[in-house]
Image 1 (cartoon, rainbow, N blue to C red):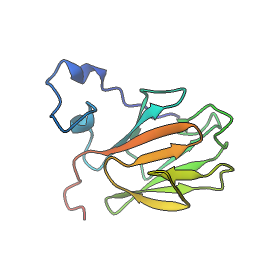
Image 2 (cartoon, rainbow, N blue to C red):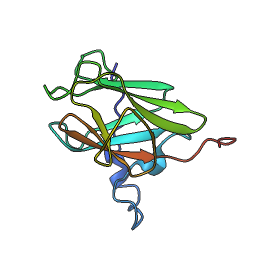
Image 3 (cartoon, helix red, strand yellow):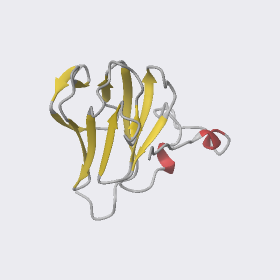
Image 4 (spheres, helix red, strand yellow):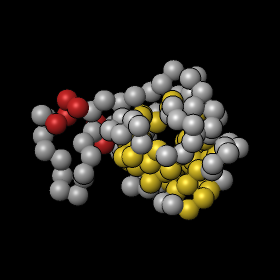
Length: 133
């Protein structure tokens, strides 16, 4: 099942902060994060990362379905551990990139750009969980 977070309704609620270019981040559940497609066939799509592990790939059963030949069927996983999110390449053909650097595994920080095939996604974090590190 695909997790999609739609924050369109937040545009009418209140204007975003000057340093916050994408609305919806403040509405995220504590400890969750958001991936926003900035470039690629699904530009503008938002994917909520609110589970321990979220799969991304071209396989229709992927949590984040990225339908393009540049994406492997099982391309990457986003894992949450101890309040941090990590992207893990799970054997993709074209690789996974964070801020234009190829990675096998990388801890993500707010604003990082993750590239999977021709898709470029921005990683955004919500409020930290209480008791998180």
